[in-house]
Length: 490
Image (cartoon, rainbow, N blue to C red):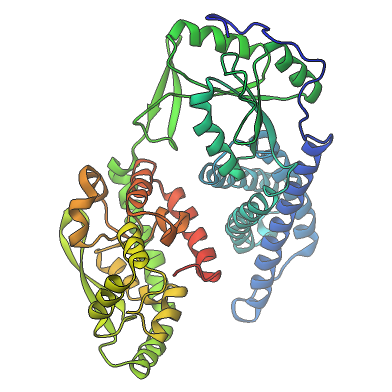
């Protein structure tokens, strides 16, 4: 590659093959539209069913001659709003960003519908409870169905938008790996351009690599590729500016990956400072209003969960007593807000002589000893009772922690509640992680659980704290339900 702008350095009669079937964009949009219509239909149907069932108690009449035309207007309003706000196809958005946009778009759509009802003077005939329940259910169902569609459809080879990655091969490896792992983003790397790459290097993580800008232009024109990802290297700023200018003439959308940044990534926005690009990072953790909303959210949802699970908790306590000797609850000291020690209660899942059993295994089995040192957990743990295995598989041993949420010791979502003995291993990250209450669930639980090393857990907790918002909490809770139902809690 030249030192200024890309120039042709190799020619080839044919560009490398790229799997990008025609019509894939329309098919993606059609799948998303059908999913959205399904969620809207379920929301309106459930709202109507609940209001109809309440007529004997609350009275009132459902005016179908008003409801049905309004439903048609609503569906059209939502589809138009989603199109204007970029939810079709919505590639390149994280799950949290898409959830926030769905909420905003649905609220705007219902605002349009409410205005139409007002202007049509049908307000007195339209049930306000149906309107509000439809909005709430639509938000919930649409978020869940969209997450499911992107999770499953992203496994298909034609799903997503093809992107070309531009940058030095050494720096590109990490970015390509992250794009391949982040399937739900829908940004599928299909080609890498690095004119300075060694001749023998043909692929990076199975993505073809070329060294010709001329060949790149052939590929872009042949497949109508709209996205480029520019990975910043160690070159000087003027060279970066020239390369980005070259890319901007060929791609409608360019993603720039900075060489390194200590900023949180989820809530960073750009702003203009008299022509100078400026990044604006928001740390919601330091916003008192946001943390107040988080606490109110904990009290409302945690209180409801504590009451609903109380009968199950009683049943499990009886089963534990029947299964093995010992108390029903296991008590530990954990690190809470500000590093203060808190009493941490869980349903007992281990034998009374648990530590002796573990010590015997670690002395006899070097492989088990290495696993325990790496993960601070062990899969085939001899300490765990028969009932304990079931409790751990579905995370039922953590039910008493809903009462910790109500008492203020914990939050529904937060960093892991670390043991006191783990404080030295937390290192410099402890000062950040201990700024917030530990969580009943968290980013590391839904992104890896037992498959993550201790240091990786710290990194995941650090990511959560740097990018925290209520939307991230909601996403983690939805993911936690999936982990619970799939029995991945061991």
